[in-house]
Image 1: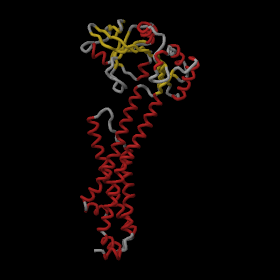
Image 2: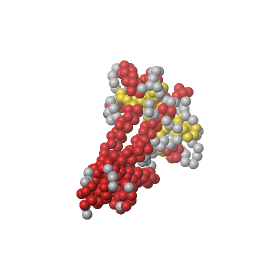
Image 3: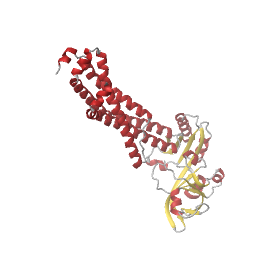
Image 4: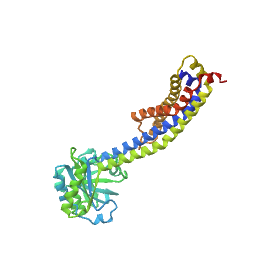
Length: 388
């Protein structure tokens, strides 16, 4: 009978569902956008390693004194690499300058790194080879270039084996990296990688490093490892003239922040659900008034108050659940269109979101349908039959 009652007033039922449809679609869409954004950011973090710790000179990013602190050295990296919880440690130094090939001059950034750096950072080789431990030991004048350098200098030719000049120093191209789609920062920067010994001894002339990238073993706790590294370097330097960037901590912060944002925005979207629930309650009260005589007849032929309560409650829940399912479908359609035009932060509708939407719709139906259903159940059958 509940289904028949809903179908008997199709337009009224549709208009009643509208608030639920909009509310559910809003909540599911917001959560889907939050899930997609969180997944994309975590993928970006994973691309630089979720168990890596980067060590920099100074007190933090933006510390103007960091450029004058020269206590972070190759020896620090070697000592760190020997720790039981460390898988590898690679120093990094960098230099900006003019990159020359034939008659073309470009501004590029050269990074001096160890042979483990590419594995730690999740960088993939497209062609050629990476430099190895022997290249590092021998200060080999070799370089690995990124896709931007290849496109600018070697668009129509094979770069492998070619000699380029960086700050007038010759470097032989031995490899080309794949384009890193998840990379942070400006993707148009021209990047080169050479052994840190080559960069330090032949280009910068410096004995200190800009940073040390540490890969923590899979079975080690990154927080414990960070404390161990802090104590080690404080003992070596005599002071804490460095700071650390723990990728796992960043991941936890991102998860916490996006979770809070999803909860906040979903709470705002829930207001429309409450408004929709009030609309359901109003329509059900009108329905009870219109069907007073029907209720009296049902009671007169033996229907109990519980049967009347159940009928009207099921009607309210049915309207809300159908509205919820339509809302989920609307959200799915929105996500398809959104993902077609926006690829950076895709909407990701999870199974839990759908289950939550149906459960929420059911809850709204019960909460806002109880009062009209209870009113119908409490009608006096004699008064109901006397109603015109």
